[in-house]
Length: 492
Image (cartoon, rainbow, N blue to C red; front, top):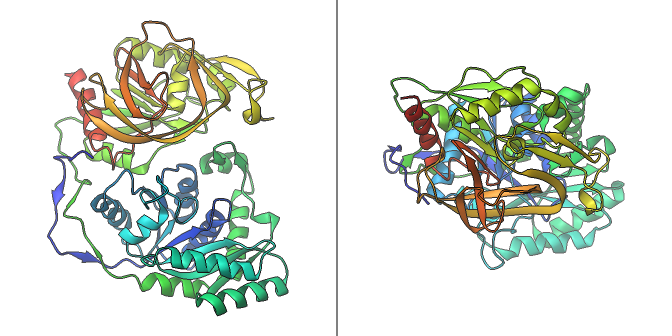
């Protein structure tokens, strides 16, 4: 972990009481995201200021949470962040948009899934212990009754430091099914069943290869977006004892503040303008990354590579991840925007592209490659589209699926830091960059992860950098300050 010099010390011993509860599950696809959406919507409708969090590295679920609550959802991760930084991000999130009444934290995968088989690092359970909050376990109870008690008993006994304070039964059939499962769980484990959710196809949210369809896209393309969220809210409100959820959250003890915070504004003589690509194609941004760029002295100016004709007047560009492959035709058709970005790159403007941003900056994208397995989908016909061409290479969508933490070291001075700086990040993609020239230059050497080729990431030309690594600025604290300083120094 790096230590930033841009941290404000706090008074030792300060504590903060934030009602909080963590929503977890026995495994992925148990329904915890839908339950979380419903709880956030129900509590918000009831007038509570609800601060949402997501354990782990996920852009899409938090996009719904921000949309529903009107507050910026935050990500916390016990592998990328130490305990002090987890508390820092948590408490900052609960305070920066106005004091939250309650925090709802959604876990990742199963409660105990993490980086390793014999430790809780990177798991939801680790976050429950760091934030000292109780867990509500969402259990997929389809076709089980008494066995549900055995599952809850096992989860309860596995780590006595994790307090499972309630169970929500999902995918329940009829009343007899609900009664038998509830009675068994409460009799054998002593854990109360505080919710029973019956099977309901109207609770479904649109999915694709990286998970849910992002909220920004779903709202634009679906006239019934709000109606579907309302349906989920109503089902959860009817099936879950919301007062019990509030009681569990209020029982959380005061949380010690960290000794310092990274969320400190920096005074700069002139604010460089950093353009942020934001639309249906590019919307994978951690709110901490954007906020910390502003706190480091940047002015953020948003633009759309899909819809805007020209690049706005900016001193640097940040193109985040997303789904450029699904909007490749629209991106290709916007010739003027592609031309502006390529010209800016050739002129030396600092440009940083993460994953989807990297793909857009290459010469072309081929989607829906035949014979490449499960990734070939009806929504992605086989076709090749011209992209910006600021970076060499041809991006292919195919069977290759990379989901991993990564660890990198900068081999060159770049917009995200100077030579020798180390980071922990993550990558999540179904694409690969091919047809690279023999003299292609890379700025990042990975000791963990896949990257672009042979353990290298960070393809670079001039001051343009594209990588598969997704950086988390609250973990890699060099990101925001380095980005702003690099842009300012070029302007000088």
